[in-house]
Image (cartoon, rainbow, N blue to C red; front, top):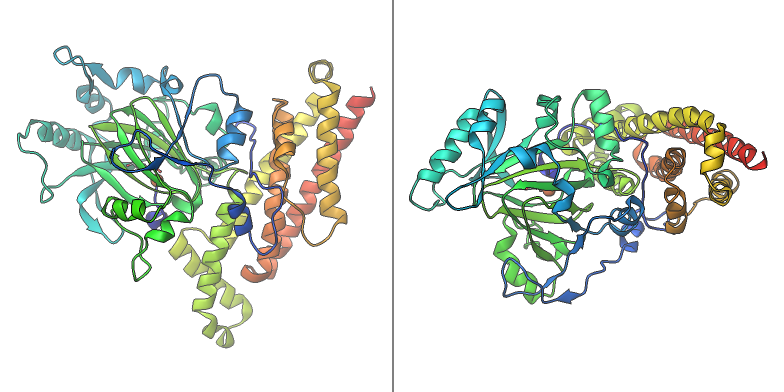
Length: 499
Ligand SMILES: O=C(O)CCC(=O)C(=O)O
Ligand SMILES: [Fe+2]
């Protein structure tokens, strides 16, 4: 994960990128309209759940063979959670090598010896699950070999863990950053378009790629992920219980002072009594949980568990990221509105930006840099790919109908941004589907650019309230370079058609 309470930096690279949001109509008043547009699809049914005596919604299980496009439309664009069954991790090095089968019990066991010999010298972040710190848990650093020793001692101790003892959970370990050549796993294709890790990796040599390791009983308190990012979480070994609430449902759980519960299991019976919708599911070893944007969740390790997770975003949730940022920016501005009179406008915006960065980990300028960086990379890719369009291979492999379909979509988008009125509807699901379905890298770049155009458009509208003139100028420049690139791409695509 990385919960919203402890993020402190802006985000990193997808292959060619592809994405988006499912809304065909978004009003200016609200990016929030976009969020509302997504209907929670679950009906309440009695389902096998961690606590068998209450009613929960069902989660979708994803079997082998589902295409990128289908996954994108059903889960990423629709912002719905799912569990991908264990076929997805079957060839991962970590799944094969980090555990062994106990000859006596015939059960899988974590290979402490192997992990200690490979990574024992690393410093790792550890949280004490029995020690609350505001809405999170007390954190410290320790050597990985000492953590392994703790887990081994813990196993040998005959008494069950009591709440007065420490319960140490290794969390948010930047494993890939620390062991870049180890290749413990590979990112499933569904999650490859990852603007956040692309940007952080190139700009700050940082990332949002983590390993978690915890004993039975360790847990993560109720939270939503940093910047409204998505997360995916793969169990290498062990099992997890996940309790997930669709965006908005968590508000029904706040106390008198509008605080969310720290431990959501304290209010599960209230949630059931109030008819609040949530999911309560168990993730088995080898399975991957997809956590959508803005879903509050709490996680319990039901056995000694190792998991790998990434926080990420792309066109599928970038408007949510921007929406959250704009809410936070507006809040900061209203808090220091009194100071506006005694400062120049520029000074006041700078002050707002400083506070926003400290409070939220990212400010308006950071977001703009992030979007500019992803746009630059796609603009550059589009130029490179344009050459491949002119090669005979492309012409023979790509059906003319697909090319003309994409031409129509891009043309319509350019028209909207250049001719039309105040606000353009974001790209429709059908259009997204039809661009993505072609499987061409070039079309995926086009898709990202169309999505970024949507983001920039909304950003321009919000910027009037939350940004300074310099930011507004940069947004306009960005918009015109994207439109220019889309126009050039159109010309090339049309020339392919007429030949
Ligand atoms: O596994 C955990 O304890 C927390 C994982 C999480 O919150 C996430 O993947 O978003
Ligand atoms: Fe999380």
